[in-house]
Length: 267
Length: 287
Image (cartoon, rainbow over the protein chains, first blue to last red):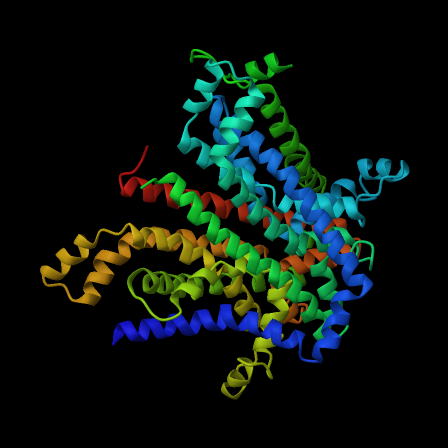
């Protein structure tokens, strides 16, 4: 009896908060027919927004993956002072509100700061332009790869690397042939999480973008503009693109968790 | 260069040898961390430190600012508590019972992490609007979630949901069933077993998850702005107020409010770490 009640509450709660939002996006997107849907996702502004979103997410994922590998290499292979402080600092961006993540770049590179003034005078526009969007996206996805790799590499140890080194491999050889194969699923896991977040980031990007249509508009910002113009079907149509990204992220995440689990506990 | 870095970080050389790549990995790590995270955050603090105490008091005691802080904190606390209760329930049901469709729902629990906040915002608004699928059943009960305090809370419940479930789940999976069985054998009722044996062991994880959800809810922007209506003094949250100040070129106001929020978030992070430390000590897992 109690068991049934608990299951019923769980199913109701999860259905309202997880299933219905997905269904409502899809139904609303096609509410005015296939033609409206197709027009909304193929109009030039939507395509520009998609392109900018993918560019920013791509740069952020590449930069943060290189950083994640470097940070994990440093933290797991050497003993040094301040290691715990470094690990804490790497997690810092997760505790900063998205809006504040955007604000810090406006303060640093906007027209009111010395650096910002100098950059603008020399022809570099960062805020209300693509570089600002990329910076903000890098910031909010900063920890993903590093925080995945650090515990993974710590648990695996570096005996294999040491053995390869003693047998005469140079640094890059042992990195590519020993370390990368050991941690490849972990790298992919971090990349998937970072990409998922990068594609959907809204608050931070909203602050630095300046909302210039066709120039500094990402997909989430494009949705906001359409919604505020009461073009609800179009807004939901564009939202389905991001919904597909989100579902793909979840599926890949599940698959990679399964792969990593099998790696860590061989049975 | 590498030598001075080695000296500064007091790198130990007690092993027979050191793997190569120290200079390169340290260089990339510290440069990227400084440029992207440390310098911008320091810029915020430096900007905030140039503000006089008088300005600070004027900004933070403005009724609209106080109202925004009240809305943000009250909705975040209530959403976190709702997540604490329902999250524990969901984790419990998923650890102990089986039902049709459980695998699908379990796979979707991370959806709030993956779904862009703007999409979540418009979807929740469509659902809970007075003519929406869920909202139409609430209006006769006198609950109109659109453009209200409860609307914000609903959005925050969505956003914070995975935290409690994902922190409680592993604890339940590792749970020693013998404790429960012992309590039952010794004559405890199921309710007594839950309250006196199970719940105390779950509590640290529940608190950690709830605090993480609370911290996330405090800063949330995207999913809230669509459902909240953004009325100053009533449903305006702090992140939105920061954006409003920026759009009015009130950089000082935006900086003061942002720094205040930042300090509060870091305080919360400290609390989470403290809870986890106590938890580890109690379970005797301290290393």
